[in-house]
Image 1 (spheres, rainbow, N blue to C red):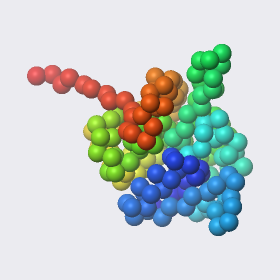
Image 2: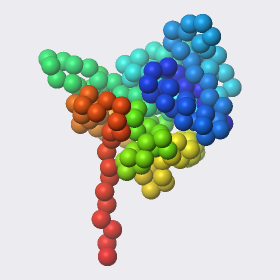
Image 3: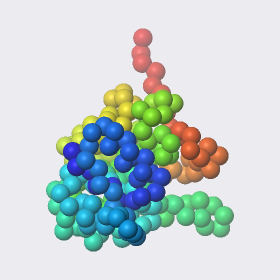
Length: 204
């Protein structure tokens, strides 16, 4: 599968490495290309899946110019958008989500929200066994797009039992609110796996 990743930071780099090892054709686009870097336009050309790996505050502006290239394409949003107001970390888009804003900006694409409640150290469980203990959520309106996202997550080392399917994109609001729980902890465990674990008690 051809995957375009927009963003060259820690998140984009880890995902690119993980999917390349799994055998996918991965192209990374930079918002500020230098040397041999691909532009976002070059990266997404012919892509089956586009991954948004830029900060949530920049996601819509980064993807909107690509709208003519993304008709029918699955766009996986792994971002969060937070800011500090009066010393408190708050959501930049209360009442909606980055994923929903992307869907409005890219009406012909299939947006899926996932991986936003784990840090970059936990995104590829195959390379970090402790990350396999975490839970990951997949939210989106299109069942086919969610299934493609699920398969790509399995390729990174996520077990099926660790993946929770959420059959509507507006679940992204709750997922993005969840990052407020993890914001402080992220600074304390930089580079180590961090996320949430959903525990269920099966009846006897």
